[in-house]
Image 1: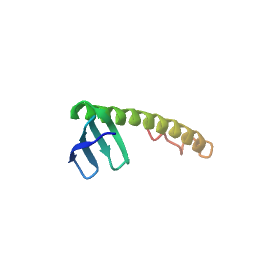
Image 2 (image 1 turned 135 degrees about the vertical axis):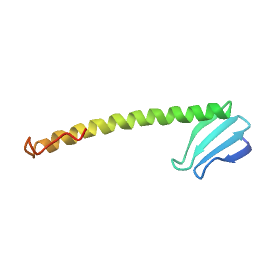
Image 3 (image 1 turned 60 degrees about the horizontal axis):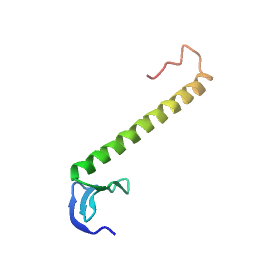
Length: 87
């Protein structure tokens, strides 16, 4: 099991912990580790950014698909001249 060596509270919701097996980056907002056992603090931040980039891309795609479905549904109930694309 990992043992904490140093704990740094970076913000109200972000902690960097140096442990015996590497650096851990914990996000209190999400309630999860963004990085586990990174070799350096920089590696921990890169892992966190990569995670958030991947999640942003996923949610942007999901939002786009949902927008298309909503637009298609709404367009069934409005006249063409009343309905304008929100993009």
